[in-house]
Amino acid sequence: MCSSQIIEFDPETRSYQEIVVWHRPDRLLSERRCSSTLIIGNQLLCLGGINKHGYCLKDLLCIDMETKEWKELSTKGEGPGHAYSMAMCMAAYNERDQISLN
Image 1: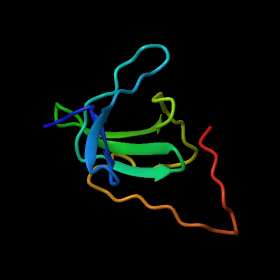
Image 2: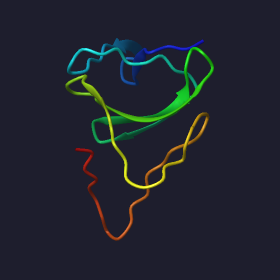
Image 3: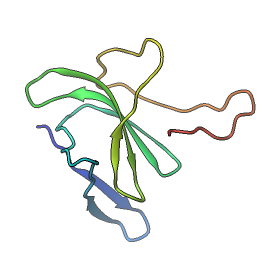
């Protein structure tokens, strides 16, 4: 089953809340499953997945968890291609403590 839902879990209250996201101009977040996600600060990154028709995706989305706005990020160089059921992680390198997603 594919979904475009984003559900946030609050460990203090042990409750779930659906997050409604938007895009300027209005565009729906595409339904997907098996995507890879990573949170950096208040930004949720979503890589690839499989859409409702069974096609593998290779897009990289960024969802601002404060404003609830999402956008597709452009990347440089060769990416991982069609990605699904992968893990993402962030490692600090060269004493770099900030990453800009703008």
